[in-house]
Length: 278
Image 1 (cartoon, one colour):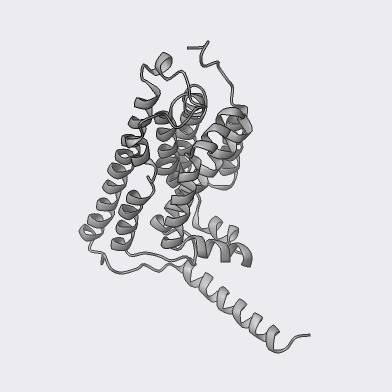
Image 2 (cartoon, rainbow, N blue to C red):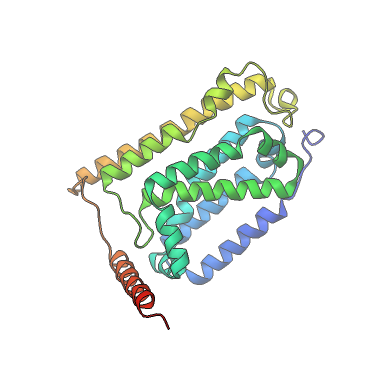
């Protein structure tokens, strides 16, 4: 295995993980949120360093699909839940940042961006690029993580002032997302020849042909997205009913009220400047 898949340290991933862990430990005191971050970073390291990270980058489309699913469906939501609301409020306080987050948090915008970015990161040119360069590989992993964050921001409803869906809306959004973000899976399943020339040694390392690896990736993408996201959607819906919370009612938190008041003040200030320019 070491001959076909040489060991690499992946120092960039290890350094970033250690830095994020140190910063979070310095700023956040909530033990529950620290646990979220710990598991998020631990899972991230497992799927990005040797051997799984190297298998995903240069050997197997199935492993690459599993890697991306894990980052998007496990690492990203745990990472979001590790950040306290007051820190999110401060980070999104500047007007340009608030405007961007407000638009990206819209469920429709999020689904479109997640579908486009998710498709691009597994397209043939991007996979080939990641297999040929460690820097390209790290950049692609960063985009995958950003895609996961975009996916879960509307579902978790944690951004101050963003659209907060009702439990029924959150469940529908998550279930709908599972149907549209695996756009390449049917192409992989029904293709009659391998589409990724940069991936090799599948048989020597995983005992499967390149075509079978590609077809298996299609089924993994579908089931790996449908099953967990469907389970989460039903859990959100039925937990709300069991708790006596209206499944059609959108919650409102104090951070949302503060952000909406701040936006009104900014709009009034802009109107005054337009009508009374200096």
